Image 1: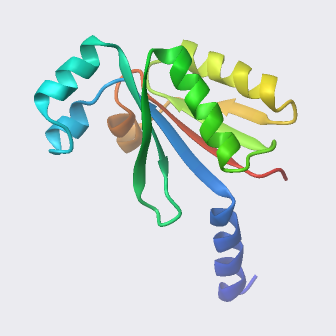
Image 2 (image 1 turned 120 degrees about the horizontal axis):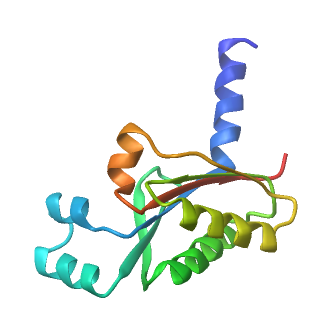
Amino acid sequence: MDFEGVVRAAERFLQKTHIAFALSSFDNLIKNGRMSRAVGFLAHKLGMWGIGAGSDEGEIAMRGKTRGPWHAIGMLIAEMQEKGFCGGRVAIDPCCNPDFAEKLRAKILERWETARVSIHPTRGLCGYYAQRHGVIVAYGGAG
């Protein structure tokens, strides 16, 4: 492929690829001034999870919050459905939370039997942003 062909293929790939995440810790949001220390402390004590996704503009957008990991899984599934996921590849990257990743995989396969779900531990920068027990989910259309 020539350079322009590679660029067109990459743009098509990016248009059908989405990222969602679930955070069980708000430490980075507090450190970055996006959340007050008091609110972060209260969210931690209540077992809150923050659910977010990558926007079409490439920005991170918080989509909601919930209590506990089961509700977080439900919100991730809802986010995938809202973005039009109907089966295809899914990569789950948990940070020190393999049980959550396995439960999420089971729920994805329950909803979309044709999904091809893989689990990979976070590394480096992704692990830093997901923080302990968080998860990043990348998914795309079928094919």
